[in-house]
Image (cartoon, rainbow, N blue to C red):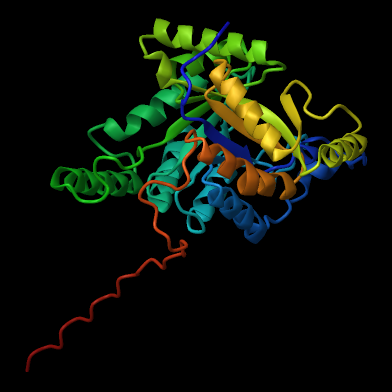
Length: 368
């Protein structure tokens, strides 16, 4: 049996898009639908979802193109950085929780990606990451995931900054290093700074790259045994790449349909499947039941070596996310396997701060 040491910390993240919204609408769209401007982002509603996840002390939230006004399956291609820009705006409305926007490898220039991520670093105070989504593309000019990850992970160590934003970020880091040396807050014991690289490990190519470079590997697993095997393969590949196996945290994507009564959860699942016209979850693991049962499910999978945690795919929002936050997270915190507060997080809610604009100095009056 694959039994690992108990009392191991469990990591939790969540998508901010419901599983139902990820499927194409049964309504036929016009052929020129992709030429229409994207729908405006409801920033207030998205910020409320982000703060809900923050209230549950979730480790991270995923921000993708669907949230940024690019509906799934539309084929719409914009700059490829909309998710990062949205995450940057959410940084002013959140504290503690890490913001992880998704980036598609063939849709963005590395220099633009670097500048956008540094902007997110400054806005979030270092509680950021990015999810690299590898896309096979026939064009030889399409940037590979290897190139993108190498540029972003190594850019801040270069002698000369590429942008003014990079210079500002480097200055902020020097201040934090100085605080660490002086023993002030922001030193030892602070949450790790710098971008966390998240990757899906669903194909041999992406799994190999995730084992070599990713901090978090997201996997699809249809059963506990499937997840155990995939985590073991990723950890072995990480060791083969010269990394410590625990450097790669393996999180299973889990579709959740929750209610306080099992029968109500089943009814919600049936309703969702009727809307999308297919089995909920697809190739993902799924859980249908109560938050208390989900807590037992999470503990069992972690203790059996199936994963280091989960990325939740709520069936509908905000219902499932609120049940995760209000019931699941406290249950796991009571076991000592999940934190009850962010380290060094302020109790005051984050508020947007105006950026001071220096006024031009008046020329001195000519002397008489």
